[in-house]
Length: 158
Image (cartoon, rainbow, N blue to C red):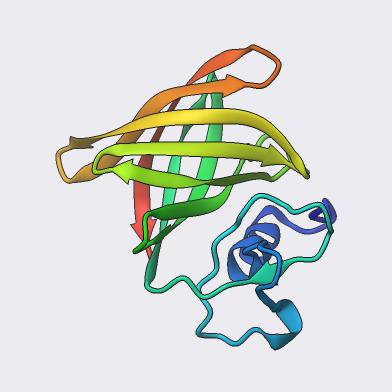
């Protein structure tokens, strides 16, 4: 699955979060209805984007840092523990990183980062609270061996 870099960051995120759960044999986009729960999954070997109903979900927006770079995140939380979304670097236009993973237990989040069809990093995060604000922090381990601290704070929920 490739995302056009000619779309604005917000439009690209909306496209990804509104349409994509890539699972062979799921309902295709042409058959999708508005009640379908969107969750991004790792791309399959085909470039067909498909949707699967996964139950109730909540979307949250976050801002924070990956290494020294400011980043904006959107995550969709499914009631079955799956988490998916995107993040971008507003100062670095044109690339949208896809995230998929699971809330393995309360307060622990494991994500995989995909750039295009390629797995490019794993991210291990722990939840903390700063007053009434949710904060996720941990480490990103890129497939090329680099590691970066990651921290982001919730700024909104839909």
